Image 1 (cartoon, rainbow, N blue to C red):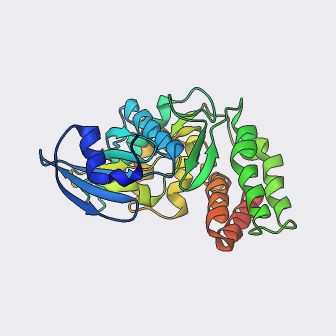
Image 2: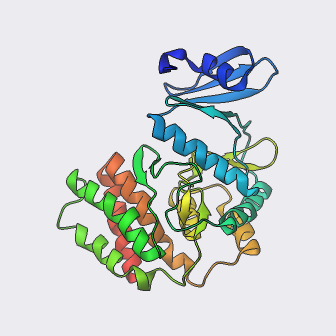
Length: 288
């Protein structure tokens, strides 16, 4: 039985079948390991079997679409995930426009249903450090309310981050989702946690995506995540996306609606500042 005491180098050797010539710890949970053929892989310690399982399945599902670039998965077990390393450079406007087109292609590859997990992936997955259930639903407004917004609202209230008297504004958004959601869209294949930190600008002139919380969802959710914390050349990403797949009228008015989920996740994990942003997003969603 392999344990976390095995270490990143031994783990990389086991999954790649190659000897290790170097190891560099980047953090308590992440290391770069150099193999004897010169390649470098990332060895990441996961928070239990479901975390590495969900991330590996998500990366493979995104790769299978043949559009966005993601690191290849070499293997995973209950403790470790081993992937290729992306050599990173500076953000590039051309790469950003290509990423927009690639995202449009990824979303168009679709998913079986809203909330569906990647093939072979667990229903009980993660977004960052927070548990996230991939339970399917027949339509996006009801699914988004029941399985993305309300569970984290309850967690924030139970944890004291959102006051019980503040919760009704978010509950009203959920009640009005059928009218706020815009035109019906088919389930899209989402990265699911597409903030700036999960976009790597490769030295090969392409943008690469890491750390997905992949599932079937609404394509505007990935774009709203890019807006939430900012992203270099975001205007060029959106230009590329809309050239490949125009967005429904009024999509910018729905950004706050789609940001409600990640903001509530952050409120549960990181506290009151994000709770206030979630409350503001709910108010914005209601007023358009």
